Length: 237
Image (cartoon, rainbow, N blue to C red; front, top):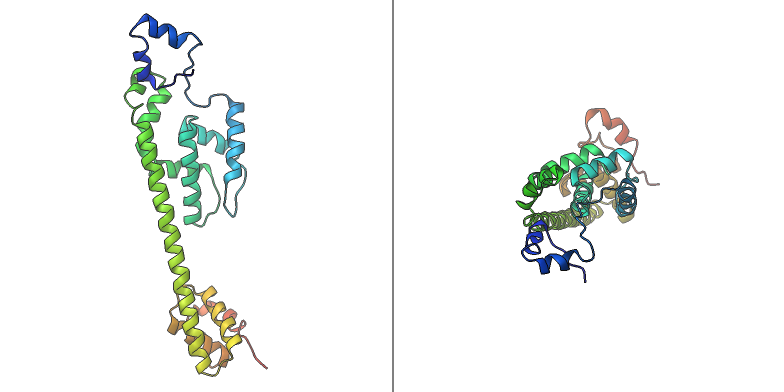
């Protein structure tokens, strides 16, 4: 039988000799996170496998040290921080982790844990006992917020893709009416949307017509990019 609990639970087993004897009969281990450097490196090695960034890389030695310092070697803190940092890397289009990013995400998303981790860092039981019952609840709230934000981003991205598909379909239909062949309309609409993701249907149609009929320069491209845009006009025999 293995008995586990927080530091507050330790007092329950010291109330009588019988309980104290039972709890200490197989030895007592006070676990304060991963402290052994080799164990932490193994943990980070496994954690690095769950990185889904375009510019992803195994955690470097400074990044591993930074992650340990921020989480105090607690996997229950390190894993959510690692996940949140990846969400931030994707949202900011950096697509890579760094010590600076880990610290920024921790300060922004996990600041509620600072007094708890400060108490753990101090090694003082009295300080840790003030927070041991809220650490789990705080982490649950952080993970729940993280999942909610991820779902929001997922729905937002899906909505953007859906809107662009609708704009593309409407633009192609309108361009066919103007006499542009369907295949050419499809390819030119895709090209314009790639260059100008925020363009409306009217802007897409106008830009394609300008390029197809070569009547005048691009209306969307900045002056310095118009020469480059005109070089990408699709021609049809």
